Length: 82
Image 1 (cartoon, rainbow, N blue to C red):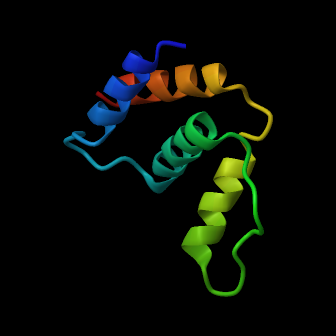
Image 2 (cartoon, rainbow, N blue to C red):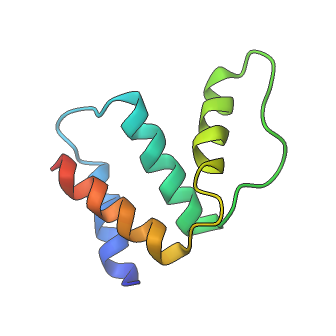
């Protein structure tokens, strides 16, 4: 994985002219977390923390994915949005 290309994609994602759908934002978040922190850990937020639960679930869907695969998917997703 080329860390520089990943970092460029992260910067690009912050400069999008149109706000992506919530599903796409969750995917970007989950892939980013998978690359930078690995598999999800800790307990799933509950109660009325719907945003936290959605983020946790999206990240959990990436469980087991390698850093390289997650980074490549992130880069492809950002490139498809620009």
